[in-house]
Image (cartoon, rainbow, N blue to C red; front, side, top):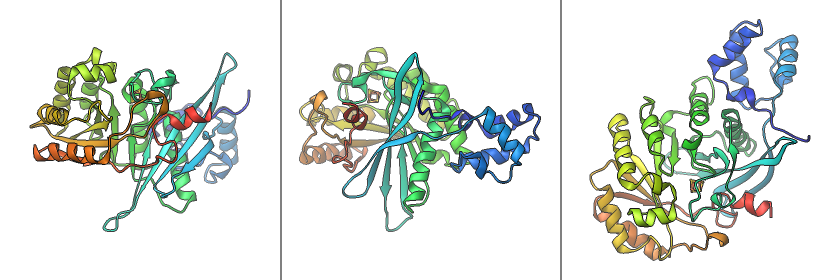
Amino acid sequence: MDFKAQTGLLGLTKDELRALCKELKLPAFKGDILFGWLQQGVVDYNAMTNLSRKDREQLAALYPLSLPQVIKEQVSKDGTTAKLLLDYGADNYDNPQRVQIELVIMLYNRRESRSRHTLCISTQAGCAMGCAFCATGLSGLHRNLTAGEIVAQVLTGKLWLNRHGLGEVTNLVYMGMGEPFANYQQVMQSLRIINHPDGLNLGQRRVTVSTCGLVPEIKRFADEAAEFGLAISLHAPNDELRSRLMPINRRYGLADLMAACDYYTAKTNRRISYEYALLQGVNDGKEQAQALAELLGGKLAHVNLIPVNFVEETGFLPSPAETLNEFAAILNSRGIETTVREKRGSDIDGACGQLRRNHNR
Ligand code: SF4
C-alpha cells in the first residue's frame, strides 16, 4: 500500500487527547502540549521538543501522523483564489479508490481592515445529493471524511498560507465537496476542534456551514447552542423548480425547509445566508426574483447570488452580468439584502468538484 494520510489524532479534542495520554500512563497535561503542536500543523513528533524522546517514540509508534498530499495546485491569474487537490490515499487493498478532495483558498484584501483568508472546506469525498448543476454530484459519493481528515484539510490550508507569507486562516466555510449535514457528527467534531482557543481558535462567527436542506440536521444544528453560521443552498424559489435542480427538495420541500430555517433563526438570532447560483434561462427570470423576495420577505436573511462557472457535463450556462444585476436589484428593492459574489477562479477549474474530475480524466 502506498501513501495513506494518518490523521486520527487530529480528530481528537483537547480533552480527548488528555484522556488518551492518561490511558497511555502519561500525565494529562501532555495532551495539552500535543494539541498545541497538532493545531499548528506540526505532525512530525521529532519537532515536538517539549515532549520527552520516550514519549515521542511511544506516540509515533502508536499514532503515526501525516497530512494529505497536495497533488495539484492551481492559483487564479488574479491571485485571489487557490485550489488544491488533496490526496489522502486509498483506504485499503479492498477499497483501492483514492480519497481525493478539493480545498479552495480565497484571499480578500481589504484596505480598511486586515486581509481575510477564507478556506472552503470539503466534508465528503464526492456527494450523494445529485444537484443537477454540480460537478461534485456527478461522481456520486465515495465516503464521508473523518473529523481528523477535515481538520487536516484546514491545517493544510493554514500551512499553505504560512508558506506563502500570507498569514493565517481567518474564516472557514464548509461549502466544498459534499453535504456537511450528511456527515453531521464528524463535521461537529471538527468544528469543536478548530474553534478551541488553544488551537486554531477560529471563532464561531467566522465559520459557516452550508447545507442543501437536510431539515432534521438544520434543527439539530440550531439546538447546539453555538454561534456557527448557517448557509442554505437554495437555488430556486419554488418547489417545482427546486425539485428539478436539487433532488433533496423531494424529501424536504420548501415549506419544511423554511420552517427549519425559522427555527434556527429563533434559536440563534443569526441571519441565514441563502445561496442562489444563477443559471441562464433556468432560475434567473424577473418573476423568479419576485418569488424569491416573497419567500424570504420578513426573514433574517441575506441572499448571495453566485455567478456559476461553466461545467461542460451539467450543460448549465452562467447568467449574463446584466441579468445578475437585475435580479439583485429586484431583491434589494424588496428589502432583501443581496450581494453578488465575486466571480473567482474560472481560469482554475473554478466549480466545486471540477479540479478533481479534470485531474482524474
Ligand atoms: S451542490 Fe453540494 S449538495 Fe449538491 S451535489 Fe454538489 S456538493 Fe452535493
